[in-house]
Image 1 (cartoon, one colour):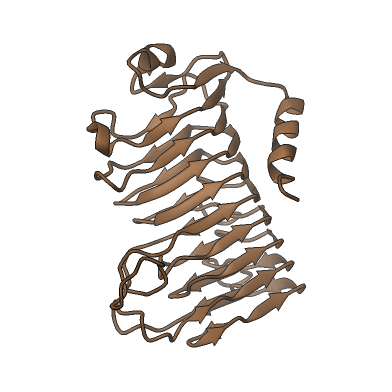
Image 2 (cartoon, rainbow, N blue to C red; image 1 turned 180 degrees about the vertical axis):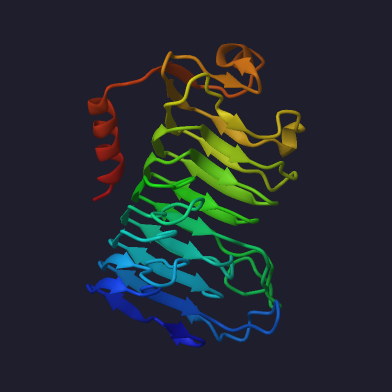
Length: 304
């Protein structure tokens, strides 16, 4: 446990196994919503660890948990066999964290909801982490980045990336998400979440499920490939009647379903696109497993 003021701590090349609770955690301190006192773990590097068989006694347990913590790097870790989310961010304090090239699977084995990654964001904090923050800090955090991860949402995973309870300012791109119920999620006032260049393979329900947005704080969902397994599928749920400046930015989607059909806002995709919405998108019947393996390989090996 990293508690309070910590800087540039490295947790590297360890194995954590048969842990009663969470394997690794970081927890800072604030003066209510003011987080400019610096009493938080920052710039922590969690690299190339193997974590499994966790949460033996406590079921709200993860491979990595952080609260009132910012600018963490999680890279090249393997996390599996846990009762709840594999990686859990308690809040959006400061932002600036990155998850890259991790393998997470076999999570949510003893609970529903959640997934390989879960976040909450129930209370905003004032910090100076955002480069655009003024001398008094800002409620707006820096973007968190989730890229080039392989996450398998088996067992009872709701999503591979579960941005829950107002989570905002996440850039999630160039990942492979296998199984789970849904693709992108954003609820209870969440906003400014961007999903692009991801593969969502064999999801059983929807490609995305997001709440209504405010102008200037919309979600992005573009250049993604989504393969749905359910019958009579819809692309997902969002505010179909939103004004143009409050509607999610969506384009360039490669969609695949059992019969090559999908609806958007209760309309067949081609009819919906005829009104100028969701450009550069297409739907077809399920591709071969070989095609998806090649696509996943290209995504995960990019820039290596």
